[in-house]
Image (cartoon, rainbow, N blue to C red; front, side, top):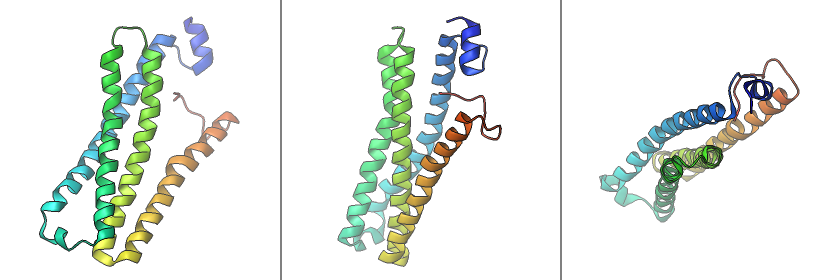
Length: 173
């Protein structure tokens, strides 16, 4: 693809290969941010069993705790897999496959971070303020995250597709 064709397609003066390189670099940066957040939450969760108060958790709280540990582990895996895929596809001219798969895994990791955040909030509120507060906090946070992570981007995307100048930007996938 010539630079002119690439420019018409994305609004940038870059070849398809340059676009894939830029998208890969942007995905890596997003994964770095996600990794830090997941590591902090996972680290917090992994220290809990060693606290005195952990032995006072009821069955629901232990189940929620273990669910959060599983979600943290799976989310960490989703963040690490694109790097593994990159190692396996390195120098095989499959950058588009790499970017496409990493994009999907990053979306899954974002969903995992949302679930982990809501689950952790639910556990903390449940232990500190009771079951109703825990379920409410987890549910409200999950609803807010769904709005912010699914609904808002969908609305912005529709606005950009309609040519709205407020939502139009130079970013692409």
